[in-house]
Image 1 (spheres, one colour):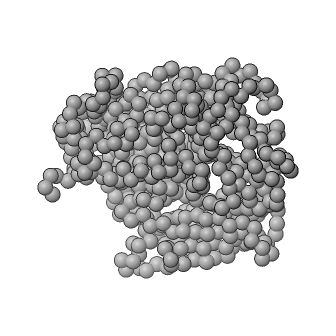
Image 2 (cartoon, rainbow, N blue to C red):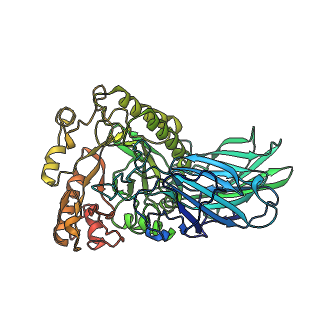
Image 3 (tube, rainbow, N blue to C red):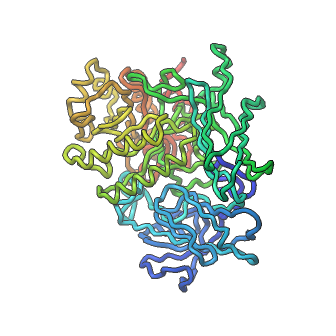
Length: 588
């Protein structure tokens, strides 16, 4: 990832330093070392933020690694104010020392953490940061998503990611600074909710100035007093009524209007902190059996996106690669992606916000049920929602997928309780977005009913879902993978039905095609696009569905059912994919 792009795009400052690049590195699979002063023996070098399993890291060791150490020096004198060290994500548990002082511990492989290291900095000379990451590859009770627990990737699971896999950076802030910012669009009132949280020295008479622009047009210039280091206000926007200009402020994939913001923290007339941000005015909701965007029914055309690259694994090779993935999804005719089993880099969400692409965010699964596993999921899921709450592109939260980690939903009350608890927790933390408790089947508490069906025959799909009596023909019978669609006590209440996984046509012209995997297979470009076109014609015209999500965006290791190759090359002309996705017939 580039050293010159700020990693947290909705709370951006100028005075920062990327710590990506070369670090000293050592594996510690037997947990021999316990303190950074131990004689670790730094026998390798690694390129951060790429995981040691990734070729781009310069190491590329794909075996089992339980623990590893990182070390590097950087230049930053103590100076005025505070110095904050940030980690985008470290898989799975991390301990961090600066100049021998333990500054932070964190558990959760997909969410950020930081530490105020001001008191650990030396007055002169380089500063030294040491990171110890522990990531037991055999632990099935931790959220791990698509990371395989076998030596080699198999079926639908992929190589592991150990240690640092998102950007590390350090920034200087004032003694009192803006630590957190939350934006909430309030569509009905034509308002933007703004929550500001300051951190640092306790001061009276802290004020924050909030400026909001639409292009060159200044929409608001407000001043708020912070009470207890917090301010929670609504910014009223001028409502043009029924005039068409009202729509110019609304965010959608077709018109991704962002409102730029600048926030300045003041005390006694002195500027303490200044940050840049952005937000958007849009609403997502459920009305009867339809998904609604900005108060209107909105058909969802989504693609399943695993978020892996061949040489860099879960870390994008560059910011341009993240932007290109958003552009390619849109170019193929989709208006959204379901980010599968991954909390994606905030820079991806930035490009989805800016270019206009809906995102379903899904919690990476654990694969063993226990109180420890659920505690870990709750902790990490809460951090993920907090991190991504303000992104307008995020429209749905999904805590569980296909009963992974809760395999006995039909028979074990504790498993059902977990899904229902995570659903209600998510709705409590964010009441502005729909939540799918368990996507795919065995639904209980949910705002959208997601169905996974990989039947390769388009006509069988048509006959199954073009029904006037879905309660009898769908929900009272067993369906894909031998699973019931809704649990007893949770009948379909008219929620939108979305075919959230289908297709999965494998097409691989390489010499190793016989060792690849998919839900069905095509042996030519013509056969591939014809099969795709016939499947998409069915799901686009089936009135039962409020949308669909095709599997999948790109080939991912042995799973070759992408519309794109692993290097993002389209398998057939992208114009043909676009037309089929949107059900545009030749000649139209």
